[in-house]
Image (cartoon, rainbow, N blue to C red; front, side, top):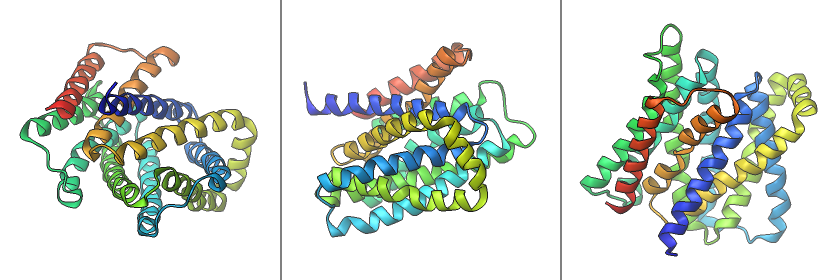
Length: 282
């Protein structure tokens, strides 16, 4: 089996894991506490791994710090999108716009220029995923504000994806980069949550610690695999595969939450699959 195929399969696994932990958040009313619990659990797991991995090279630490800051913006944007709208609108816009933005930014910053055919592939991926947001028509009322938050979230997804992709390539040790990023990333988010929702957060931990633990494992595995993939493959290619998590989320919603998986979702899935094939092999 070629390395290219192994990486692609692992990125699909990462996408499924990402959809899995987001399913936990989707089913919880207090999403700030849910996200913080998952990220804090991941930080504990990563901190336990630190004695067993070599630290990343000095040149990569600035990328770790930048990624932490951009992740805070991502969480703020995502929570704002959830607050003003529905997950089914906000999430596909945020995740679906990211591959296109990454392809645009990675060209000058990482020197990863795509062929015209690969650009078509990226466009198909983004259009397929974003189309899920309009499965039931154009968002109305306050949902319009949710769309703006979702687009801002997409910019943050692009930001941390490009930053971590460039950072892990300078780290000399992907595992060290991943472990230190995950161990430190949750600290500012946890401090903010404790400052504004301390009692709600501890109630959430008491009631959902098993779910938070499972979410932490899935979250670490999902983004850890993605960062490792970006140390080997192109940023746009890895992000394109990773954002199939939205399709896994739609499938999981149909399987576990009783949501309908109709022809529009099937058409979106076909567009994303074809787009990824064109991007990877075009």
